[in-house]
Amino acid sequence: MIELKNISKTFAGTQILHDINFTFETGKVNLIIGQSGSGKSVLTKCIVGLHEPDKGGSVLYDDRDFTAMKRRKRKAIRKEIGMLFQHSALFDSLTVEENVGFPLVMFTKMSEEEIADRVNFCLKRVELENKNNLFPSEISGGMQKRVAIARAIAMKPKYLFCDEPNSGLDPKTSIVIDNLIKDITYEYGMTTVVITHDMNSVIEIGDNIMFIFEGKKWWEGDNKSIIRTDNEEINNFVYASEFMKTLKDKLGG
Amino acid sequence: MMLYATFSKPDKLSVFWRRVATECVNIGISSLMIVMIISLFIGISVTTQVGELLSAPWIPDYTLGYTLRQMSILEFSPTIISLILAGKVGSNIAGEIGTMRVTEQIDALDIMGVNSQNYLILPKIIASMFTLPLLVIYSMVACIYGGYFICELTGLRSTEVYVDGIREYFYDEAFTVYWALLKPVIFGFIIASISAYYGYFTKGGALDVGKSGTKSVVTSSLLILAFDVIISSMMF
Ligand SMILES: Nc1ncnc2c1ncn2[C@@H]1O[C@H](COP(=O)(O)OP(=O)(O)OP(=O)(O)O)[C@@H](O)[C@H]1O
Ligand SMILES: [Mg+2]
Image 1 (cartoon, chains in turn blue, green):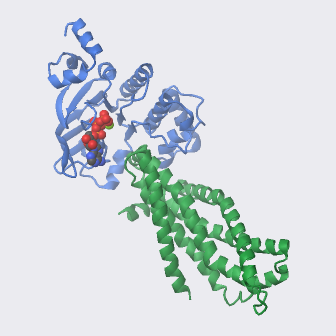
Image 2 (image 1 turned 90 degrees about the vertical axis):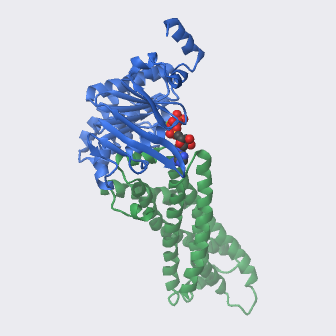
Image 3 (image 1 turned 45 degrees about the vertical axis):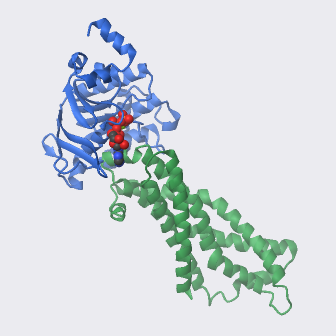
């Protein structure tokens, strides 16, 4: 469980986030949704500590106040966090295998065989085998995402963050990646936070959803209630395309 | 602040030393060829031109070799080669780290709890401080050999006289070699830290990575020249 309390963020006088409170639940896929530029990435960076939230705000990882911690203590929590970046952020100079094994080499005392076992296990879990010795530039975008997921779960994290896991993927691959994230979350009982503006994902995997509009938390709920809400901004967002509007009309609202 | 994080204790020493070794190979091997070629040709052309100038009968014949040695040790090999490497190595480092910044690879390191400055920058600084002096030694040898080669080829001077000139006053002036090797250590630090700094703090996209590269080459070249003046004035 990750709790956000009064998170605001100001960059050089411009306030991007306004007093956000929310709880991401354990064993569920939690979504942050909203239009481009609404502050989703900034919020996520505040949660994981790549940005510091403004004074008065705090982030609690299972009741541990991350914001108040010093660098050294944060490091302990960071090891429980896996993150999947928007553009995968695999290390170009390392092979697939070395990428997945990287956190293990850096932070555990595991032997080479143990690391190799764990790496193969993770790669198998994301259904990517026989690619161990290729470099990130030699595999497709969808495969890169899988490798990034494998790397994110290598340390058996308690918290998993995914920034737009299916941007740049075709719809079919998107669904595969979404399902992978969902299955892994349930399997390992992780607290997963997914940032997305893909409506398919929202409907498919949204157990607990926060909608951000102009840096404010505008709405929260799950994937069943989001279809029925009469909140105007949400409807503008969800039914942005003509296709979705017709769909809504056909389904009778 | 940046210095503190960069020079703190590495997260894992075995990984750290492996990275230093890799960086040494990267910087050293990839630059060796260009350093050798440039030095050889500078040796050749300087010997040819200076050889003509110094052909007056009242100038001792060994002056040519002597001049070439002093030029190479005092200025050409340590400074000019470092300037060339500032272009090559500096833009390479800024490009690599800048790309890692804009593609969120540095964020990925930070999230994992890796001290990214220490992990990325320190091995490069150590490697370049260690490798540059070695390249400079190669450059000196190549430059002097260039002169020898052209003497043999054209008979500008006999090679014996040329070698005599190379050896002239060497014991009295051996200290110049130490200075010549101290310079690239300092220049190596300048090149790696400046370009890593510009790379690390790149904001934006691919275009900005290119800009960081340019800035780091310009800044480190200017700093090298400034330090060259300071060191040279301390030397005599
Ligand atoms: N480091 C920064 N300094 C100043 N302003 C920033 C910074 N990072 C983001 N912003 C601003 O914050 C706002 C929200 O950006 P953010 O990246 O969070 O949007 P987003 O919701 O993730 O959009 P997208 O879906 O396109 O990724 C934007 O107006 C952006 O210009
Ligand atoms: Mg974003």
